[in-house]
Image: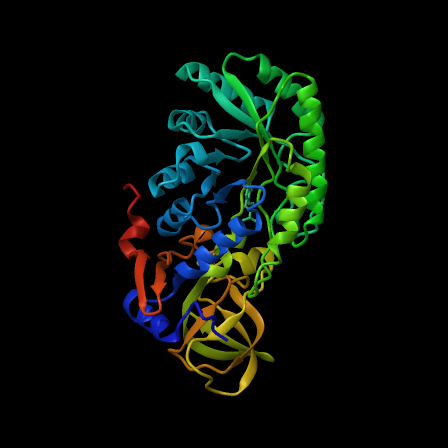
Length: 406
Ligand SMILES: Cc1ncc(COP(=O)(O)O)c(C=O)c1O
């Protein structure tokens, strides 16, 4: 069934005007998710930093900025996008395990809220950048709380042995160093335990460990202002996200009354439900005992099924056609891993019919590529019951070679 956010008549118009495959986003659904966070966390009044990596389209980012959100960026490119979309520098934080000296300087010059550093060497590089610019650097450390969020191993980030963050012991030494430095200002501490986390319990555990550590730091004379609990709240593909109130209770239970400003970095749970990939059937075929629907969208457009085994619901845009059968929905890329869905039950479509791959607003376009020299898809934003606009044009063949030199 099509969600109320994606009216079939509009989808047909978008397909006709923008072509397929195309990402289609619902402004109303995006705003609903942003506001759900604000409502659930009203008592705690945290700073929400939307994680641009989930979906960095400028139109969506501008909506988040207008709702008062800050931004969580993980590269100079995302920082550029965040500033361009209107996020206030004082609400931007910069995460990531391998920031370069240039990226650190860019962030300092922009005057962002703080940098989430992930190693002692990065803190030293930040100190040097700050000294070069003669501008003290606000720094927070990403701490690995050694908590297992029980999610996909590729998106588990808060267990010791992952490349992310530093241990509490190492963090203590780094904070003591930073506190003595003329060019570093320790202001916060962060964890991010993973993505697609479906339960509040691991947050409660990690937050408790972080809070105890912040108290210990204060006893050594280092007082922090911010406690950043990362992102990672899950989305059940094709369904509503699990209740945010449980997350708010877990985080609020630990930090309310401490005087710390809490920061959250949600990405997927905001962007996923508001986006879908609109794709057109090219052919049908049988292979062994399988029915295939070959569509014009592929793993270069939506790679999550191939790399995470993600299951996205697929629905026909027009009413039912042929008998309901089990299909693998596959793309034209020359890889067996190129599929959008496997074993989905659908009324048999005809060539030329439109299908909608749901729950694709996060880590969809932002992870897309030009693999197989396929120009990247267009992106369209539905702004009302009968209104939409293109928010990124489809790439052309010239775009494929535009950066190449002879
Ligand atoms: C540091 C950091 N913050 C926030 C996020 C956003 O996570 P999600 O999109 O699952 O909410 C991520 C994603 O992995 C991340 O690495």
